[in-house]
Amino acid sequence: MTRFTVGGLVGQRLPIFINGTFRDSAGTHFAGFDPATGEEWCQVADSTAAEVDEAVAAARAAMQNPAWRDLSQSDRGLLLYRLADLVAANVENLARLETKDNGKILREMRALTQAVSVGLRYFAGMADKIEGTTIPVNKPDMLNFTVREPVGVIGAIVPWNSPLLLLNRCMAPALAMGNALVVKPSEHASAAILALAELVTEAGFPAGVFNVVTGRGASVGDAIVRHPGVNKIDFTGGTSTGRLIASAAGNALKPAMLELGGKSPHIVCEDADLDRAVNGVISGIFAAGGQTCVAGSRCFVHESIYDEVIDRLVARTAEVRIGAPDAEDTQLGPLALWSQVEKVQGFIEGARSEGARLVAGGGRPGGLGNGWYVEPTVFADVRNDMRLAREEIFGPVLGVLKFRDDDEMIRLANDTAYGLASGIWTNDINRALRFMRRIEAGMVWINTYRSPSVMSPSGGFKESGYGKHNGFAAVEEFSRIKTVVIDYSGKSQDAFVMRVAK
Ligand code: NDP
Image (cartoon, rainbow, N blue to C red; front, side, top):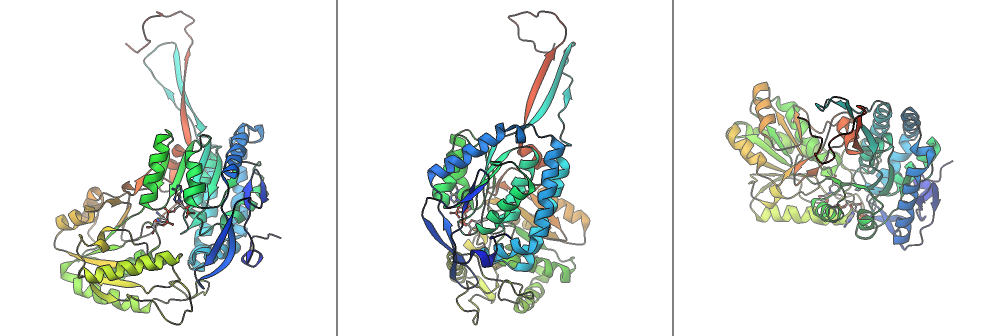
């Protein structure tokens, strides 16, 4: 019987997980809060520098352990299948732990945890299908081929909004390719990742392949990024943190993949199916309380349907059911952090003073105790140069803007520092495909929104980061190519001239 349940962890200190063993950290501990009540529910360890060293050493040793290093690709896949089954069998518990930590609605956390299991199976199947290539190098009597190897120790730095799903985008392909991991969960959401560590052990992964050191970003996260024993960083989080990490990793000449913030444009054309489009816009901004990197926070509406779309958005927003995240009919739960509530309120005040027109929400709902709730909020008459349209809010706040023609729409949509996701609603396929070509965003959704797949590469352009998760692209991220050249001519070559092709 696992102790990693909400009931089992209430009032307890969360352990850390190094080299296959859970233990109490020697570091200080800080409070983990339940956003639905605003109350402390557990204690999280701020791992020490020595514990980070130990976790990295365990991961490095695992990379040299024949039980992992020499495990066949198919057997690596089998371990991942086993883990997928264990995650599937524990969806309810894992989802409840995530909801307790980050306040996102239980129905969504169940769906995302199920998706973790699907993702593990996808990469399990890939483990023994990754091949090198043979290359015709214009040199008779020479054979040139490539092999793909694991990168080594991956430092995974995970945010609070969807800890398991976001970790798994790194973990599943990294394990499929034979890497080892040192994971730092967000200080605000560590419990589910520790519960996952228990399942990793149960699945049969050798000790040291997966390690979890909890704690603060500025100490534990930074130590992982700078650690000479860590070969690559996988980071999802805010753009300003991403800059710090990219700079530290760059200084250490260590590759990093960064999935950062967004200010994604969500377009409604005059020829769209408005029922579906408005539903898509609502989902794009209010699902997960807007706390997703792909939130469609800038909604561009054609001027001929602008008033009608505003009316529909206001009506739909009024229907959003706000409440406890574990209630089955809740659509919008609390925000994950009190600092997010203050930040969102600051944006709402700022938008008002910049002249945007508040048409829905704008306050905090009553009757929900001390939970960290904010009303779903819509501003009309937003200009693209307002702060509301330029900075990532990470909350349930939509800005609606008007466009006259497609050239203006594309220009405004691209006039942002970010380039993560985008969406367009239109029944004109030519128009949709022209938009797809011209938009500067890593993901384009046409007549749908927030529809990712583990099989589909995802990642941003511009200040939304670099590197691709999911799909075959992820296997490339978590492996490296070694080139091998064999001369089978049996002859000596000119010792002083490089053997380039003639
Ligand atoms: P951060 O970017 O600070 O957090 C993401 C992760 O990075 C956490 O594990 C954090 O640790 C860690 N971290 C923080 N500083 C460092 C550092 N110097 N070195 C290494 N790791 C570090 O996000 P926040 O939680 O502060 O949220 C800020 C904003 O970021 C949000 O408002 C939102 O705009 C954006 N964001 C985007 C996400 C996305 O999915 N793209 C996800 C989360 C946030 P810890 O939290 O433990 O201190």
